[in-house]
Image (tube, rainbow, N blue to C red; front, side, top):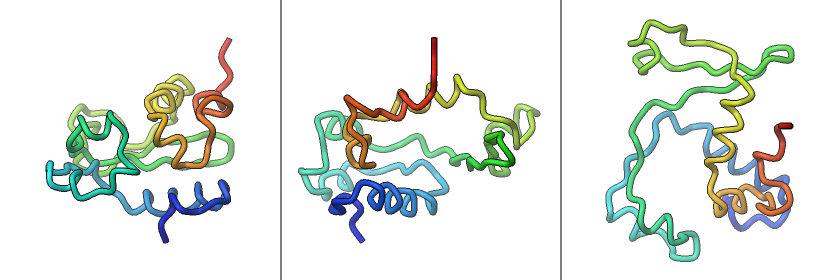
Amino acid sequence: VNACKLVNTKKRLQAVMLVCRVKKRCAVADSDDTAAAPDQYQDDEAKKFVGGCGYLQPRYFVENTVMYVSFPEGGEEEASGQDRKRPLAADEALTIFRRISTADVERMGFDPKINHPANLILTH
């Protein structure tokens, strides 16, 4: 199922989450991979940026009312001696949400001007 073609925004977000759930590593794409993608899904930033960082992706989950982030074994957190599982602070979540590009916000089914994911966290 192509998540971008779904009209219902709730179902689109669920489809995007399903696709992203299986990704364990930040994908490192060759320049050929971005050329093979349809131009309608690429904005100017995507055409300039080729590849990813290649790091293992953390897993986010909620226990009771606390959101945790868990880093897989062999990640950079283990090398520094920190715990692999720790609570996710609100400022960390805000930083992650602010880094989401406008095109990705639209792909997830949000309107970037009205309800950007960064607006979900209350700040003063």
